[in-house]
Image (tube, rainbow, N blue to C red; front, side):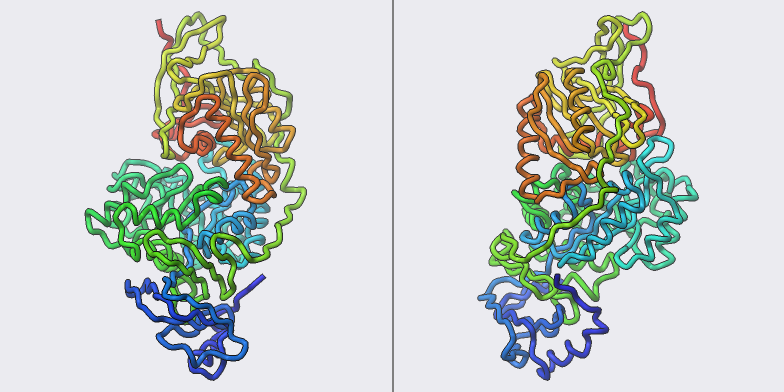
Length: 601
């Protein structure tokens, strides 16, 4: 695997190559230099590379050529810095860090800043260390943020592990930890919670970056308290005013385009219409599943989308390169094509559509014409990371039935309302019939059931509630052990027997996603690593994931990337209404709430 020494160790070599005293390892000749520092495109530029770093960038690099120099002809194409994903979760791709990397390199991603709080919620600090160590073996830059909120909302959920200040202090000493992962417990920060402020302080004391997650639309006192608490960025904005408020308060606004989160378009208007300085805006994906990675792209997809919204191409590229590097204190190492930086370069024939024709990382060619050419060995996860689904019993249909309040013929129930292409939900209410003491679903009005099955400690616990927005119109159930962030099991269905079958199947295979209808399994994506990730190739997982999406559609679902919506229904740090192992949670008040409002007449 190609590694790269620090600038200090490479300095003499780089100077000697720039001066012509030593020949370059590689020369890229005759390209258009996309200079993200000056905002220019400079023609007839050559780049000399040595020891995995850039030694010289200029109009004539003939003095760096030696007998062993590998020459790449750019033929007038654009030379673009490798793209950086500023905030993302590998686990959302349903594959390991290695397989995620294999999938995104052909799309021009050469740096990722990952927050492994998903595996942290299942396996604790040991799980974070597994992904940290794996990241160090890869041929691109994969930096790790130490998870800050495990569980995400103490008192409102119980995860498979708990991480605190001492764990953060330990991880901050690891070589590949770049900072603190998104601080999701924003009410805790605003309330000056000792644990939250302790983790933030520990991170700032060692000069590393604190990731933010303020998921409330309230930009009043609570927002200002959160900003004062030290978060340096935030990716949870969905409106133009959200991006503006964050940048005005000294934060970086991270605009995300994931598989199901379409938050770039409304927020980019802060630049294109309101004229705010783009230097404090950063592009990211947050959550992308394997189908998106394989079929649509990664950060190149986000950059293209930003350009389509009216952003100048070089500005969009800056927001996916140098802005990210500066934010994490890595400007001297990443984010631009300039001397001393790691030689992470994309060659592309068009700046607006950004076809990724060649990808170079640390001076080595890793991908050409959309195909990986580098050999990257598969990761090996230990047995301790497997067999993590513990149901405690065989579930039956009755476990999913919701008893009505005594003597009720109809009830007014709270219902989780899914919002397409956004992470927040709505707190809805619906009047439901009661039959033989059991509250009925309402298929006509798109109200089906949701259950959260405890899967870490084998308690056999099942929390039942209602959800609307999926459109299921036949007997079916969709179950997943990916359930941000505590990662219990979520089952959404219209049929109790199918819900029980789907849950038990995931217990049998050690985790994953399954779709069942009328007692028949329509799709299965096995995720044996922590119940979150497959150890198969992303291309294989993408095919299985597409079968899952097709099966959900077969059951009546019309939502874009409905699985991503499904997997966030237990995320008790994003308003308005969620489900957890303690019950139904009102995230606007951060408190448990009753399923029933008042019995209807």
